[in-house]
Amino acid sequence: MTNKRPPEITERAFQFAIRIVTLCQHLDEKPGVSRTLAKQLLRAGTSIGAILEEGRGSQSEADYLTKCSIACKEARETLYWLKLLAASEMLPANRLSAMTKECDELVAILTTIAKRLKEKRNG
Image 1 (cartoon, rainbow, N blue to C red):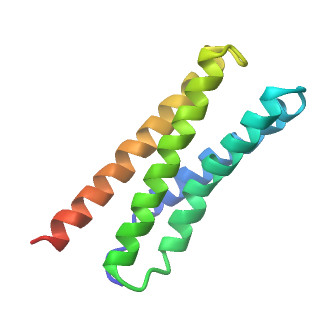
Image 2: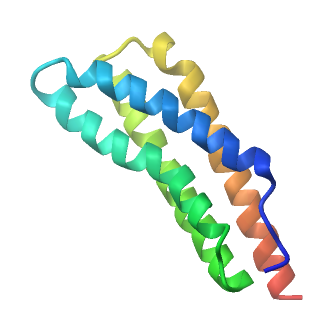
């Protein structure tokens, strides 16, 4: 496939996943609901980069578009969990603000990539 995603988004998603793992380790130390939310956040937040990495092996532009779209959905879900953690005061909002901002930027980047690929396919 000729259209490869810039390495910056792959690395950025990987670095974000590291931050998610660290956050979830902290949440997992607490009893109750925080552990449940940590599992949801961990699954969604680490899958963004994993799906993008899988997309590197796409066999067609349509396959690559699908991977980018799925990664974007996972980023949106991650954003939801981060906002929920802040709104429910399980963690201070200021502790989550940088991660929330980064996740929001990942959503924007992935949305743009998917949009451009769709436009390219449609002529």
